[in-house]
Length: 345
Image (cartoon, rainbow, N blue to C red; front, side):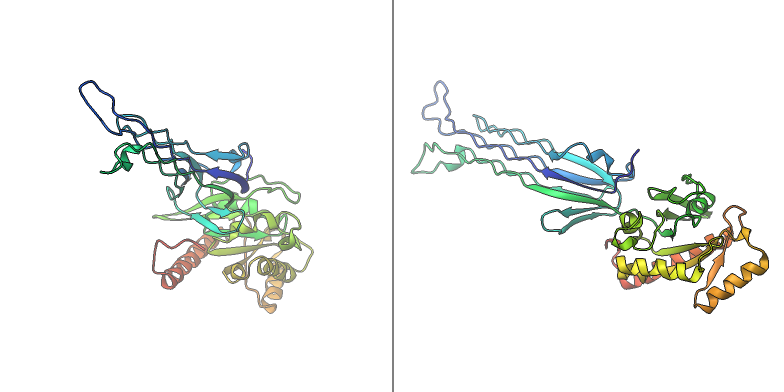
């Protein structure tokens, strides 16, 4: 299925039904009086978050989604049928924006969380307008129109840890070794074209979600390469892991600073998150060359943790360390915002 994480379309709630004008006409009943019923309410347009979907691709084909309109009222004080609700299921982590104003309408960051666009009220029938001095009203209300909004949906994956790195840094191989995710792995740049999610299970109820974000290049925050398109998926991550490949000829410290600057240019708050530097593909280095690279990074003020996803070197320690960082980040978040109902950042 094609991965789509941003889309724009129009939604509308249903119109309310019109009230009815009628008078009771029965044998042996004189001057029965007005008996026009009310119109039915318009249907509600609902967005609901679910784990059953992980992309917005299903919304590519319709430009307008509309709830049902209420039916007109009828004689004998019969109220018209209410319009059918329209429920749109979206992935957990979907943000809903008003396209015209840019206002954030809802952040559906939990399963079954909903955002509703109520339908119009039904109009009153003429039975409501009878008075002691006006016993035969020949008027009824029209139903209220529904609300129409052009919305932009933006999906931000819900992950605890985000893997970030230049092309061919080894992110896809790493996530395939520490979780059950099976992304495409190949020896050429930009093999990852969409974000991948994987669940890392440490046993005893300890698990966390890792997101593999497509490789950045310099200028990604300005739209270069694929990074600009997917950097938003890091905005919910508590910990960001910078992967730097040991087999790259470029200076590893420069690559770390490049990644950090791209993050800061995209979102300064994102750049202040807990960040961990991982030196990948160390199986291609001799022990002496590895130590020299680690020392050079340390002299630049960067503490790097060596791993080899292929050989499995350093992976158990990596997973345990990430779990510890997540627990620390969660404690800090709870201390800063003790309200558990607050939206994720």
